[in-house]
Image (cartoon, rainbow, N blue to C red):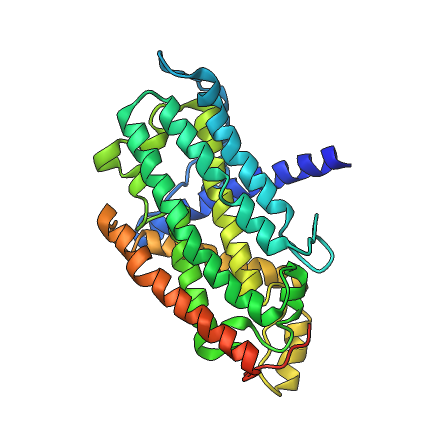
Length: 336
């Protein structure tokens, strides 16, 4: 059963990554008044499959004087970290692989494993640009992990649980992004920025700055090993979007407006899985929108944003949330 579940997750990861790659190419093209992929399949829908086949059959080149075992282990660890993170995510009321009581804590722990693969890949490549890119990625991911965890703790405080399904059920009367008007929105805003930085996506892609580091820690990888890094990047994009939808946007809960009974009844007709998919897609699109809107930050600006802006605001926001919970000055009603 476990083997079957692992195969199912790997298949889901691969299909999701190919869909996201195609979506990003099309979104980027429309932002730039282009058509994007059009040759392979109808409107280029098979382009991702063609690219996957190309990478599968490409020669796997390993530079001389490298630690070959660690060079192979780097991308494998990155993919394994995403595989472990997916296990804890409930995708609908009826589909969750492991709905753990410590789901939030587990996800925070395994999400930090990917940085080990990046550091191993950069160090074992015997290339100064790869090493610099890996060091940048390590510092960036570890730093922004703090703010992201603090923003998640705000929701844990209000829901009174670290179990993802319980957090979703706590939003039956309204999503946390606006049920606690200021605190919830600030936590969501910090989560959005931190998750973008943790994924090394523009404007926080200093680890892969092509004008400085060629391709960062990817530089000495080709074939399937490069594809594994690529797979991990896009699955991480899906995971952080799914976590954001679960914690702040009600997960699979429908959108309701007060006492608008007819409107709410129509919203209830939409399946729970569709609601979750729409919310995840909205956050994925927002992340892709960032890529073609904001310029890349410098390294000093990147770290200053975390340690001098996001972290202090996050701590103050968490303190205010704790005071609201302890003093029972709720803007909401929820009894876990």
